[in-house]
Amino acid sequence: MADIQSLLTIMQQLRNPDSGCPWDLAQDFASIVPFTLEEAYEVVDTIERQAWEELPDELGDLLFQVVFYCQLGQEQGKFDFSTVIERISDKLIRRHPHVFAQPETEATVAITNTDDLSHVWDKLKGSERQQKQLHSALDDIPQALPALTRARKIQHRVAKVGFDWAELAPVVAKVHEEIDEVLVEVSKRDQNPDFYQPRIVDEMGDLLFAVVNLARHLKVDPEQALRQANQKFERRFRGVEQHVAENGKPIENHTLDELDRYWNAVKQDENAN
Image (cartoon, rainbow, N blue to C red; front, side):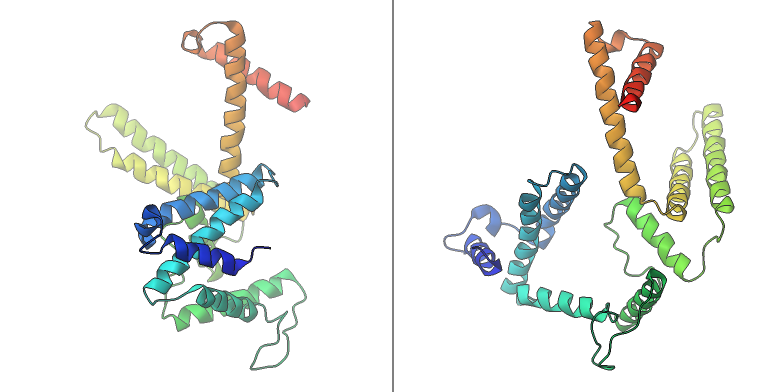
């Protein structure tokens, strides 16, 4: 049976300067990042499709990214795989005082509900940020996160320190306000051909940020919701294309009303099933 040491040995052989793989030898920390992101999204895609037979392969691809970084770290004398294991083990124990006895108390902390747990986690994370000399609540939110996810994290962090609406109504009102501001800028553009386009971009960004805030208040992950919307649109548009193929007329020769009728037919079929 294969174990983690077998994988680490394979990685070492791939990076062997004399007999390793030229591609693997050419990589560095930065060059692997796009592959790491791709593998993470492939894991997500597999889970969303419930393709459980494929999941071990995709998880293996993602684990290999971690092993690759650890090999690079070892070669450069920065860290190795055991360092990563030690760090995550310590963090899991430290952040779960309700499960593991802490050295300073030799007893577990009583947690009776998820609110208690959230309070403990926020306190622990705040302490960790102080130890890292991160003074702003926003300091350790990765810049590389997808924009919707990062917006949600920013809003969650500021909400923890009280910068948030307690009611849903002003959150919804803010979305409407931002829509109106986008339309004002669009109107200016329509009246003036030399209009500065980045103003619309700026207002659209505010609108998207407000929509993410609405999703957060509704306890909806905006990234996941948009992925599902993309999948739904793609599925339905493929249904439209099937109707078009049965009609025998190129899609470009259809009117929008005709395509809308196909779209509605696809929706009705979905709802019937």
